[in-house]
Image: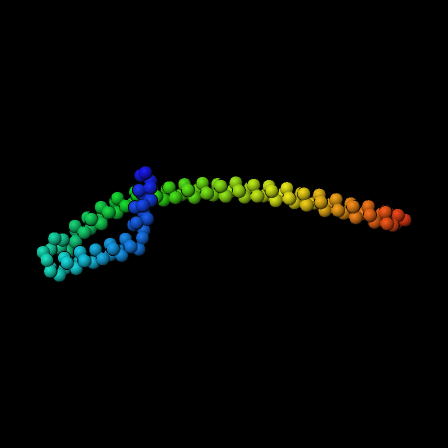
Length: 126
């Protein structure tokens, strides 16, 4: 369950909706604290904003790493499955090539036998 939560957090934080929403919140925060339209709760250099963003980054990083590790494991399993599929396909293709070569040799032998029947006086050795 924790890994699924990490995937959801990483997907949310990696979306344009989150980036745009956070950018709007940051712009409003800075604008309200610079213009003093209302009381300054975080005057320049915005120490509280810096603390909030550091807190967010400190919690976001592990979630994102957990999600990346989970995705890497999925990718590894998929690569192994692809490798097994490719090996199996290679073996089937080799078997088909051997079968086709045998069919071709058989056809050539039948053609030679027919030619020898049709022209008995001409032997391949002559």
